[in-house]
Length: 279
Ligand SMILES: [Zn+2]
Image 1 (tube, rainbow, N blue to C red):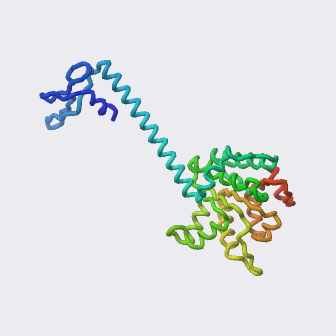
Image 2: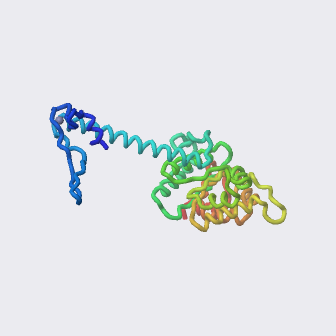
Image 3: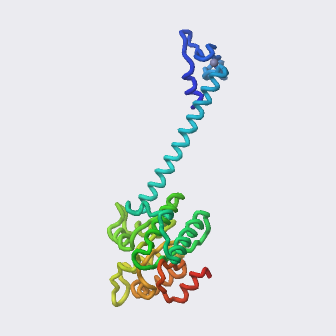
């Protein structure tokens, strides 16, 4: 491409020759003789003068720069698409790890756990445990969940992010023109699922499971069985979460997620504490 553009340094004279505008020499036509003896014109040999070489180099450098810019732009658009498709709202776009202010020891270790999770995923480790970030309002759980979403999308990983309530309503009405089953499949298959604010959306039935429980059990269980990680945040204590969602769901989460507290509240669940210590 660059060589062809460099031919802009040449002018065609009346005899259909190309003349180098720098050294003034005519260029030699390249030809090729075919099997049947016909001669096909194959472009020109360049004149090889220093001026041409310098001009050619300049164009080549410019072409390389444009090429790199195009690659960077494609990457930027791909990341932008992944973030848009993740469902991460506009207001969360700047909730990066860099912007996270870790004031307490709990927040510092939560930040570290979130960053470790991303590093392991980016390293392509198999069966990376997800995170269940718990704590009261304003402790930064959602910020960390958004930062994980952004970091993973920037690494090219498709992510689905949503509040538990919004994910459920997406299932209810289908996502764009997809059916309920397709939406659930996507939530089961997506390399990373981030569920913000787990627990609130339940209207627990006195007997049997609520519709919401059924949906979540299917998604969480499928992901659990296929080693696909989840990031979850909740304001609920372990007891509240178990009451709201049922043992089956919470015990799956305990098995496949590290419990990470963003405040000092004690969850008083022995198994979870063991997992937190990395056992
Ligand atoms: Zn020349």
